[in-house]
Amino acid sequence: MLATRRWFMRLLGLVYLIAFVSLGVQVKGLIGSRGILPVSELLEWAEQRAGSARFWLLPTLLWLRSTDGALLALCWGGALLALLLILDVAPALVLLLLWTCYLSLASVGQVFLGYQWDALLLETGLLAVLIAPLRFSRRAAGDREPAPFGVFLLRFLLFRLMFSSGAVKLLSGDPSWRSLTALSVHYETQPIPIWTAWYAHQLPPWFQEICCVLMFVCELAVPFFALGPRRARLWAFLPLVGLQCLIAATGNYAFFNLLTIALCVLLLDDAVLPDRLRRAAGGVDPASAPSAGQRRRGWPRPVVWSLGGLYLLLSLGHMGFTLGIEPPRPLLALMRLASPFSSVNGYGLFAVMTTSRPEIIIEGSDDGQEWQSYEFPWKPGAVERRPEFVAPHQPRLDWQMWFAALGTCEGNPWFVRFLERLREGSPPVLDLLAHNPFPRAPPRFVRAVVYDYRFTHGGGSAWWRRERQGLYCPELGPSPQSP
Image (cartoon, rainbow, N blue to C red; front, side, top):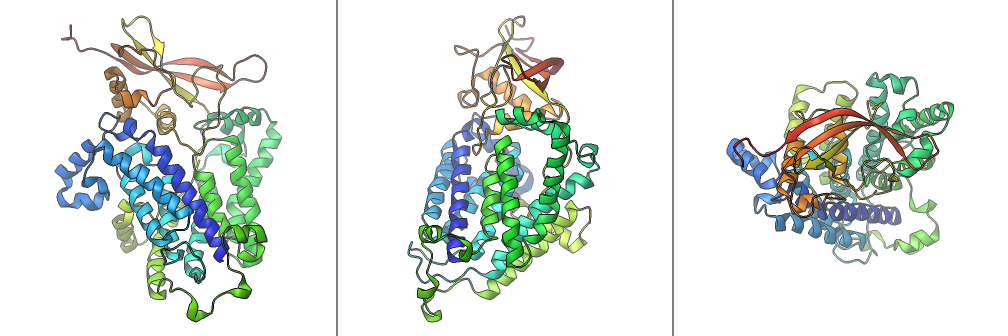
């Protein structure tokens, strides 16, 4: 699996590159010093309440320095490391450094870095260390085959991800999944729809139900083949990759689909790869493979088995939680101990399908009478604007606005902080928006209005139709003592 491993590493490096660059262009507005949730305030709060335990509760290099420059250094430094991984330079060391940098950001990212693909990237990146070559140069000659147990653990991660995603849909008791009608509303209620979703939404109900059945087959049955013998794994590859391609073609899910496809690559082996792909990966011809004495040393077997066994135990505990099975108390304690590192996680996407689309529109005013709307770059706003592709970039504020709309203003304190930043005219926060209707000076008042959005059904220039539901957050303005 020398060439297969190399393709997996390149794809993983590409995902890391996307993740760091995507975060780098918005991190100051999200958690910078003038951002919505400044990381310095979180670290100060943790230091006051947790003392020396803060280093374990929030494992981040930002304890050394939490300035905007340090945030950017982690993002762009991580991007450079990702390029080294793509180029196959010191893969094991680079993977450890990548995991450290991303964990340092995810630990303090608060609501903006709490997505399942952030956890999946940390888990995949750490597991990948067990199969990475122990060398510094780019020359692959002499590499050992990846540790079989390490490869199995990555396949088991893929199994857990897919099977859990299907299981939670049925175990949640959500009627739209059990009646196979979920896809009839999914395309218009997903976080950031795209124009292809508008067309998918127009498909007849019977077709949506067939697609729902096929999705359950891919998520509940096919993952077992990923743990089977070689022929079964090869059969599992196409449906699992095909499902990710269809999801990516109808929705914006950041780097999740590409990362899942990277895991699927490990279902293959060098024998099924075309010669061109083996050569492009720098694979070794079996006929000229080095002898055992010429091969580089890999990870010692006791290290792989001990660390892998601990990981397997923790992952089974998380999977048990997903399936409604409470792990034994000693395992629960171990899971809590490891939880700050977000590197063994539970998964399960869209357990309950949202059947409506409340959308928050933020407005500002100088006099409290005439209101103008702020426009976000990607989430629905103006009904005539076509929903666009943005993945694999993730506009994290746009995404978080979708979650906020499903709750209340009181239940999302970060949202009030966001409105306060708009009243202050914070430049890094305004950079997260597509249109600022107050370019000269921030407005005296801001408020949030909630609308119900629905896809149109053909005809006209609008992609959406909307109906006002009321205020999401009352207006914020100068205090009564202000002049």
